[in-house]
Image (spheres, rainbow, N blue to C red):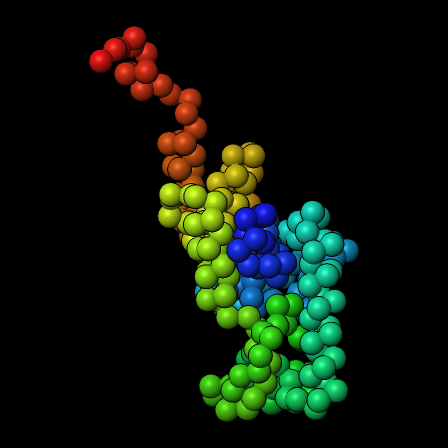
Length: 213
């Protein structure tokens, strides 16, 4: 994470650490609301994830200080918006029509708010959106280049690493499926194949020979 911080900053480092520590998709992470963070139970509620399904994932204890600092930053941004009388954040599933002031509440505010306002593409109302996906992608590419890593690395690599190490630690496949939000267990099973290849438990026949060239 140090190289990620060097290429970007504390915000990018927190995002990358959360992706790796929880297995969340980038879109799910950026769409988190304050009310989705349960620090007491060390859990994160993912609402309307892929397939429009909700699920609960772990909130890594090691990230508590960083995430609390992120919420403190978010609350300061929320306070500025409220003091300026700006429109509240976007609400899903027509909730804005039912609860028109809910978007102004702290509970519905973004955990990772954008530093800039933008026009809502549907209503054209200027409001605060969450961070855009390109920000972390750009900074991760810089970090990978600075670290001299030759392999292809993307933001999704952090989720892959989470899944692989989860299974490597002995987590059963159904639990891993639920944490990753896979609708089909066959998708999760892909990671078991990766483990078999990477395990290194079986030697190549060539490695058993004292072959000199």
